[in-house]
Image (cartoon, rainbow, N blue to C red):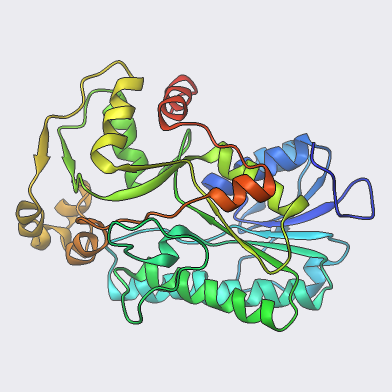
Length: 332
């Protein structure tokens, strides 16, 4: 276990997003190493697994975070966020409230409470479309280059964290790539499960470029940042640079199935736009805003290197083939 920078042998971490994909595994990992978790949950009755693991539950959401909630906490990991692409204007406004306003409120509450270390979980999407270039943490995206509401809200939240760092906030920023693994309910997670079962009929947006990273590696990286990360620094947490077609092929291979041979043309996807605004579209998995989905995925690359985390923190993610095999083994 890496050495701690804390002055006490056991620490208490305030965790947001603890009922989510990454946050739930973070809660488990923090408890497993002997530290305490105070988890912010909207409904304690629906968070029984967290309580059973020994987590302290605080009822509320990001709109209700107050400094008093963090009394006695040594650290904050803010992992809560809304992640969806292809949303309506109303959904985008709600996403802004959580991803941006909620982040500002949570970081300010932690700073006011005197929390000694804050890890804010951003995303590689903050870089936007890297246009085939592999960038690092120093990259500054072009102005007005947002491809989705998620992309924009996470950039705004990232900038909010940067402003607080400049004002003296004890913050470290994590930037995971595309996170996959057991329990992933995202749009890509659904495709991975279908490919592993041999039920994915086609690959949409095969040239989408991502840095695919297993969820357990993201958890490892966040805890390394909590223990060793330099205040004010940003660390990309990735696994393997790949394209969507190859990611899906790896998932199918892990399940012992043949990868989908058909690739859905983008123009066909665009034709489905009217269905996305109906109940039928929802049942078929067609988002309400197909135009945003195309803009955020068709030939777009979210490519960034995680060399800094490997060199500075000892971060050591698994390969895509290994990660997909373990995902299949663990029941997707």
